[in-house]
Structure formats: C-alpha cells, structure tokens
Image 1: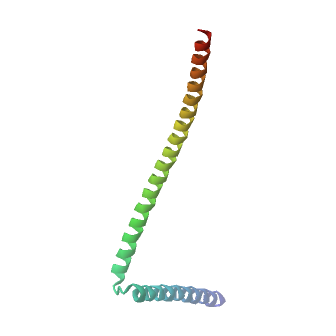
Image 2: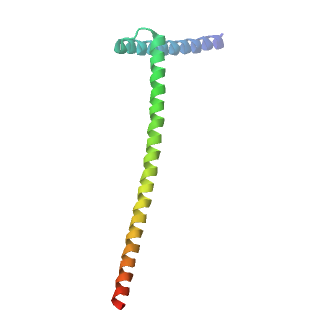
Image 3: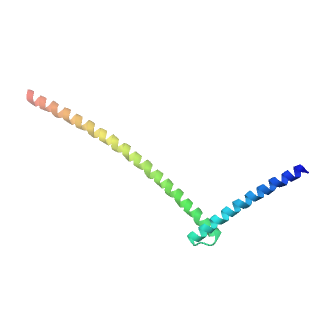
Length: 104
C-alpha cells in the first residue's frame, strides 16, 4: 500500500510540473499574440521559423564577408610587403647607377 501511495505522489508531482510548463508556454504564446498582433499559433510558428531561417542566412553571409575581408587584409599585407621590397630594390638600383655614373 505504501508503495502505491508513494507512486501516486510521484505521478501527481509529475503532472503538476507538466501543468506548470503548459501554463508557462501558454503565457508565452499570449504575450507573443499581444505583441505581434498575430492570433494564429501556426502563423506565429511559421513567422518565427522564417525569421530564424533569415537570421541563419544572414549569419552565413556575415561569415562569408568576414572571410573575404580577412583574405583582402592578407592580400593587402602581402602587397604592402612587395611594395616595400620594390622600394628597397629601386633605391639599391639608383645607388648602383649613381655609383656607376660617378666612375664613368
């Protein structure tokens, strides 16, 4: 008998917890209805899913832009280094030509 009562108490506790969760979800949908003006739960869910898909798409686009920006930064760094190397080479050539002209 004691086991049966204990088991029923546990069931009541689980049911109470379940009802509490249902109440929270129902309140959340009511807030969403009031805020969005959308009454149909299916439409709310559809709108939310579309919004999440758009957010995911934008997230991917930002990642692509970030990667592209990183690549451009790397190319810019490489070009800057090449430019500096060319400046050094040009100065060396000018110095060599100047020295050659002085000897001639």
